[in-house]
Amino acid sequence: MKYFINFVLAILLTSISYVIGSLVLSEGILMWQALIIGISVVTLGAITEAIKAPIWLIIVVPFPVGMSLLFIFLNEPFLTWLLTYLITLVIYSFVHILVSYFFKFHSLIPAWKLS
Image 1: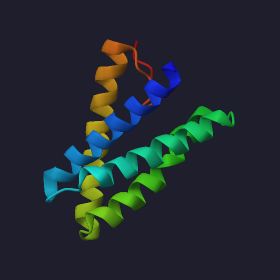
Image 2: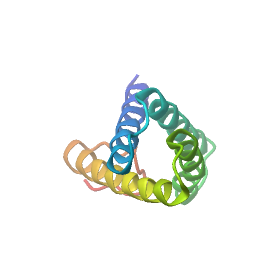
Image 3: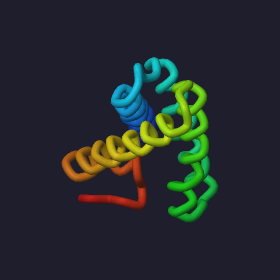
């Protein structure tokens, strides 16, 4: 049960990061679009972890999926998409720092445990 709760929490935190990041430079993406990105990225990371892949691969594999879905949903020029994705990564990293350090929740970036 704890794994499922952590899984859902990782999806929600990832989705929120995408929503906030997308609002900085454009009108943003819708919450259901962010949930699709969050579900895809976190599920792909979980599957990669389940097959006992190296930690670096668990981190790298979801990137192209998140990037592609953001590009599709954002529907903005390349430069706007790229800056939006970079802003989203900064927000995602900040969220990870907070939840990893204060709540010992390491599911967002498993290789970067801060507590």
